[in-house]
Image (tube, rainbow, N blue to C red):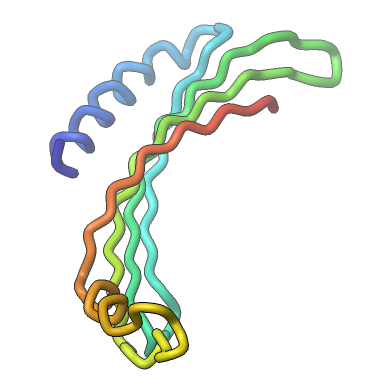
Length: 118
């Protein structure tokens, strides 16, 4: 699934929850998006975009505290490339092969699931 389809899908599910937020319930849903890259690094490049859905389920509410179970499925799109091939030194085994491998631009997809208590 490409980024655009995923973003539209998440947007549809997120917009469907706006009405439900007006009612008092045990479940809430949110959407997070972020991006970033490295800070002035001459050895490598790195960029990242992430999309995250957050689902919170109210377990118990007291006068002073709320206890919630939080689920956060996440999709990350990253790129990475080693720019300074001398970063891999000759002391490492197969350093020539590693230099060739690491200096190519890589597209990375990561799938994560965060589970927590709040």
